[in-house]
Length: 240
Image (cartoon, rainbow, N blue to C red; front, side, top):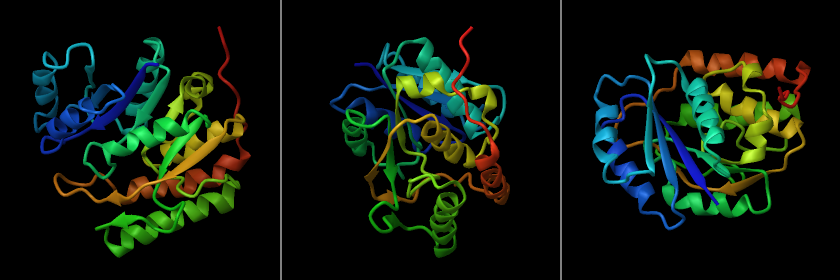
C-alpha cells in the first residue's frame, strides 16, 4: 500500500521543516509531496535541503507564481496517480491538522472511499479561531448541506484522504473552483459519482506561526459556486 500526503505551501518557512519531520516519523510510512507556489520566504529551499535525508520519500513541485489552492491539489493528485499511489491525502502545513490523525483517516479508507477529518461531525471542535471566522466556517458547511443535500458535516474541510479510484475518476478539467470552494467541489463530485464518504472527528487548532491565506474573495467564490453545483452534471472522467 503506497500512501502520499500532498501539502500546498506559500510562505510556510516557520512550519515546513517541522511538518516534514513529523510526517516522516509516522509509522505508516507516508511519502510527502510539497507543492510550493514560489514562496518568497524560501520555503522551497528548506524542502530541497531536507530531500537527501528523506531520499525517495520527500518530493517537491515548484510552480511559477501563486496559482491557488485548487490547482495545487490537482497538480498533486495527477502527480500521485501517475506514480501509482493507492491512497492520497491532503492537509495544511500549519499544524491546524494534527499529523497523528492521518492514521485514523487511513483506517477509515479501509471502509470508505473518501475520509474527511471533520471539525463539525461531533459538535464544534475548533480551537483558537476568532468567533467570526468560526461562525463563517460552520454555517458555510450548513449552507452546503442545504443547497446540495450532500451528507457531509464539514464540507469545507481541507484534511481529506482519497482512495486512488476516486481521484482517477474525477475529471479535473471540469473542476471550476480554486479556493476553499475547491474542497466543497471535490467532495460533491465524489459523492455524485457514487463514492462513500466518511467523517473522522478531529480537533482543529488554528495556526500559531505564519499567516492565514483566507480572504473574502475565497469565501465569495465558494458561496456563489455552491449555488451552481446542483445544476451541474458530474460525470466520470472519459478514458482516451
